[in-house]
Length: 196
Image (cartoon, rainbow, N blue to C red; front, side, top):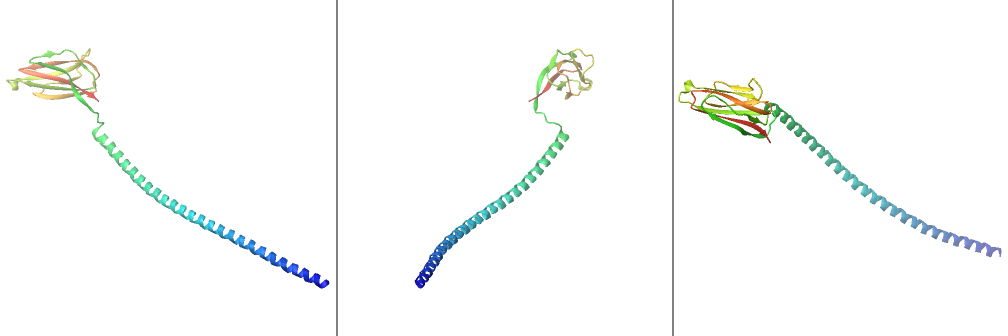
């Protein structure tokens, strides 16, 4: 009986080892499958990381190119601003507008005109005259502001045509004193610069 028991024990041990080995082999195969799946996931993630890094590198190159373009545009803007400032210094500020006639006077002898209103601070006085004896002709005028004794502007011994500009005039009512000798006919127009 001892032999049978020993043989039974041995058979049981061998069967247990075989079953245990079979279970261990199945567990090992399952673990190896999980390892392969994890390796595939790691490879997929590594591929995605590489793609993202390539995209980042591409975006960095685009950013660098845009920064270069921006720097070039800023340099061009600075150059244009400098040129604009130089043009302003050379030409002064350009004010858009036009000359509008605010008074016209004609005659052949001395005249003190009626008042006319000056709405802006820039005037242009245009004149023409004709004479049968131009060598003996005398023509001139003076501009006065209402209530003042001294002329704001004057043009004496004026040629047979021309223009006089009067800058920084105060707005208000003005009149002209015109002197004419040996003149057949004279015409004066007063214009104001009206900005847009």
